[in-house]
Image (cartoon, rainbow, N blue to C red):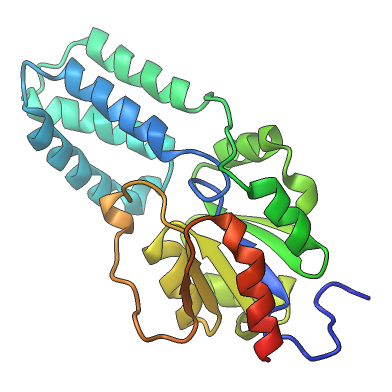
Amino acid sequence: MEKGEYNVHPRVTTIGFDADDTLWHNERYFTLTQDRFAALLADHAAPEGLMDRLLEAERRNLPHYGFGIKGFTLSMIETAIEVTDGAVTADVIAEILQAGRQMLSHDVELLPHVTRTLEQLGERHRLILITKGDLLDQQRKLAESELRGYFDAVEIVSDKNSGIYSEIFARCGDGPERGLMVGDSMRSDVLPMIAAGGHGVHVPHGTPWAIERAEPPHGEARYHEIADLAALPALVHRLCAES
């Protein structure tokens, strides 16, 4: 029996997974680096105000640098120049650059239930990894995670929207209508997949980045929320049984 084939035609044949903070830890490294950044600029700005300025820089720079650590590092440097009125020292810039390099080389630590969930779902469904961010960083983390073999396809994209999901699930699956996307971001993983006609599964993790926050689509039949990935196989089984 091929993946996605059931005696009853399934509602879901293809499952997409986000990577950062869905399969492995990521947010914690940004939080630690922000704390380090606040300490470096403590003589020039209070932490809360500094983080507001950093977020403003990140929003401005997304169209230019995209998502990921490199853009985050450049936004920290820009913010440091702004809050010091150009007086930031070379030593501080060097510290910020070093912090960015360390983020790009941190160990990959899987979240709970990842391997078992992929094993279970991969028996009957096509699995796709759909992630955004720095290409080299995402490739490194995937290699170190040792999860590549579970996925039928890997897509590293510059952003996530309904058009992207429609294209990927049409090319790698049976269209978004028979697809399901799993992730921690309401804005990037859930809402655009539902807009494309598929199922969106929210798996909350920590405090979401302000840019990724959005209100859940309560009352939408294709919206689902689970506490962790251990609950995903049962949800998928139920959706397929209902079809």
